[in-house]
Image 1 (cartoon, rainbow, N blue to C red):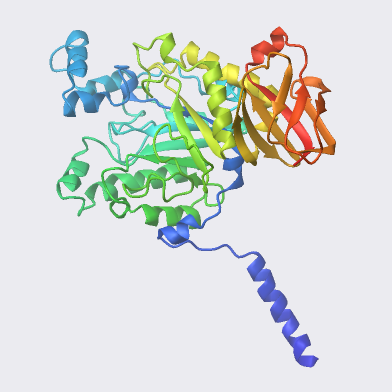
Image 2 (cartoon, helix red, strand yellow; image 1 turned 90 degrees about the vertical axis):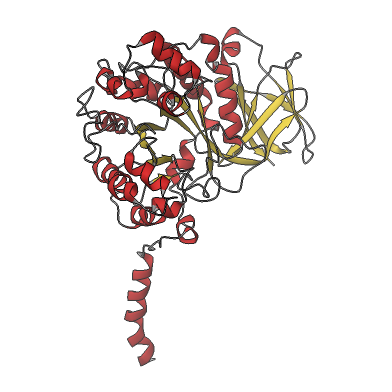
Length: 453
């Protein structure tokens, strides 16, 4: 008994230490992939991507420099001949990137109205120009050339005031940086570019702005060993000022896509047709043809409200997040057609977001018979999203199993719906309200089913 009494304080001390123990992650994928994903990301479901940089000046697309100088694309070359004098270089676009009407407070208000729970701003694209005063990007950053402003630093506080998580896109590669081209010529056996540019910039972004998310890109030409990705992520998870809330994607080396990282993006506009085993995100863009602002964009090139909401529901039903991109003008204006689409999605989410935010995939994700129905679940409720209104005003849901306590309501319509069916048997009939203009404006409708199996 005396021995047990003497051991008790020691056991309590050990238990206390273990309760507060924070694991140390090692720079290998087995360890890094085992890190739990911070809960905020899965709960957010919907975010806005922003592609903005010097490429917004020619407004041809964010890959313009590459197509013009590397691919010798005839359309890009003709564009320059027809619009700019001989000898005009890509660097000459830098001073024209003025951001004169960039109002980060207004941007944050638009993103809040859209219902976005996180925003991912381009800090640096493949052209190498940084939207913050990077000390390793001399004379090719937004403080030295163009706006003479810290575009990244100005947006973050306004987003956080609205409880919107702040993410930063960062390209690992830079098409024409001499150090990168040298390393590439050496088959990536040297790391001049990584040591001088990539890692210092990533660490600077994290320490300076404390983002909630790093959206890495530009990984496809070199292995993660070249980028020192696992070493950076181990520091990020263990010792950085954002180690507890930071989220990263899967673009850290040419072999890592759809395999490693905090969550999976797999490829642009990735959308699985079955329920993935890991958390994933679909990134897509309102302008179907490009990510950066494009001066020749036509209204038919822009996703419709119905297309956006339909895709959002499908992605969330399969456990994913939906990241929709806008490309502001070089002046810093979000084009009105983009703003209108974002606000319309936000209006829909104000009514139907209960079945989107913080939801989980249900045992059935989709049922498509005469009417396409998607399902999510949260707490004890199941949410059924249907995309067309039945002619007779009676909707049949083939998957839910009703019980004696089943209750059905339509989000945005206060009265309980009348339902019928055999308890304990799959399938339930629901009498919908009379179709009205306000219901027509909603475009996609949501039923909350309580006490179903």
